[in-house]
Image (cartoon, rainbow, N blue to C red; front, side, top):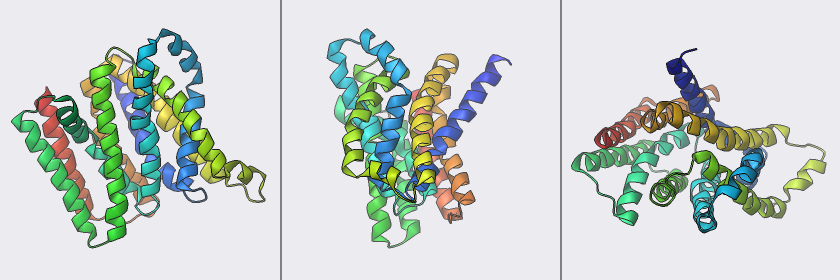
Length: 289
């Protein structure tokens, strides 16, 4: 298999893995609380990358560890809980659509926190992307619950954006596998007390163990947070950051596909709003080249 075919194979596998995260959250929420699903996801991811943690922790300067922990909180811990809480009221497909905001949030975080310059074309892309989000909310109509829980996903994408800007300015030169294994190890430590507090382990001794929801949550952690980070690192190394960033466009499409299979109602106007959001992302990415 030639190099180009390998790159596209990794790209498709990564798109399917991350794009499936939203439906896996929904399945997890069938029998578990959002705090249990998110905590189980983080704990599973930390365990899955534990061998890499022991390798990389010795190679990482001590003064970088707090920054990596902060990166884990912003890039994994908070979004995991925010997405799960939001999906108690919002369809997985719509969560996937709103996740398309991440590149725009990264640009805004770089500008407001780290004073990174923004060119006019990028401002146009941000405006178009945010317009798509507003239209997505308007299409849903006057549903305060949808607006409230939808905003939690917007906050989660802002956390992703700040984390990307943080990594760009303070953690350059470290691989995503190195950062991910260390960050998720500490996220797993933070998540374990929450699992204990929610009486999750008492479910394992109950008469009806929620295997389906537990399996989805563990899969979400091992694949969505663990193995996917390894694949993303490989893709960046083999095909470059620009090609890897194109995953942004594929994730909502995969999420919509799973939503349709799960019987979620997705209107043409919502898909049109997704197109507006991705158009904004495209304009921003084009301006970076």
